[in-house]
Figure (tube, rainbow, N blue to C red):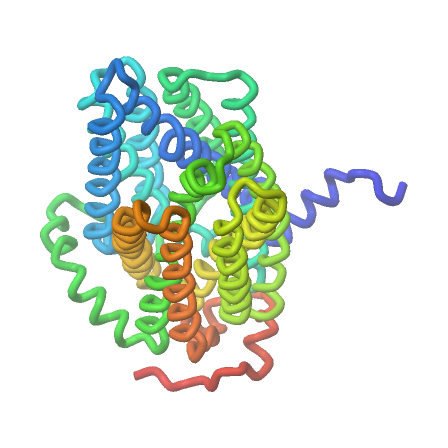
Length: 458
């Protein structure tokens, strides 16, 4: 009957997205997004900070400092070595063995934090967070393996949407069962392992090179960054895109980290209210991710990304206005509206910019350049969070909520700089049509004129 759920239809739709023609391949790939989101929400955003700042451990001041140091070290170190990690996988043309190694290195240390002493727990978290960030390099690069060129935006959107479902699932679990911080680590580790397993059991990739990575290759890989930068500069449009990504990722990464503080400290919400609001915004992001994915396939990643960034600028302005009316009905309404716009944009950024990166990167350098892509994102996270924190620290005593407004407005500036930088970049650059799978249909923007002229490779 019309309108009845038909699993065969869904399976056929998924099968059409992948070169293998098997629905379980893109399905298992998307489940990894579900799995790693459990780690980022339950452990990074929730458990570690509460666990370290408990009076029985380090207390509020020292615990927060230890948490900040662990995040800075893990993200900063990963930023430095991410191009090297990508270059390692390019030597053999395989990503899954590296993804498996760093997934295990994420799960095991984080799962055993609960009963450990505080300093050891912070160290284990730093190791796990480093590995989590490293795993994303290989996961993003496997999108090319499991999708057709014409369907990468759609599958990327599905992955992001499924990932947000992971946020809802673990958020509701924490809220409904009132799990203490000590128990969150083990539960999250088990769930991460369960939902990550399918990608390693089902997805198969063919090596694109006869070479294999060996320990003797480490010195050469460690010296890869300067060469990677030189190679990237030879790819038309890629340097400008990466610089633009540095600026708009500044705003994206900062908002993800400080949203809870803004909601509770500046807007006067309770922690429980914030969790419920974050779940609502996650639902918005899920729906938007699928829509953004379709727009990527129809109009291209560049146009879609520009639309996302423009919507973010509007959302941040509305949010800044809401911060001037804390505790009032209009203020809360504007804050929720801003959150819905920003939440939808979070999905859009993730969907569009990794497809954009694949378009610009030569296939043989995909892992290496995704490492540089990760370096840019992580570097902007460190810089953006530091600037935001300094502004709030210097102005909050004199301006109150005005300090948060100023800090949010600086994010609008960096967002608009990113918009300006990527606007001239054409997403027709990058891999040739000959690299596409037999029978694949080129994306429409490959066949129609773009707003930006196609420039020759240097």
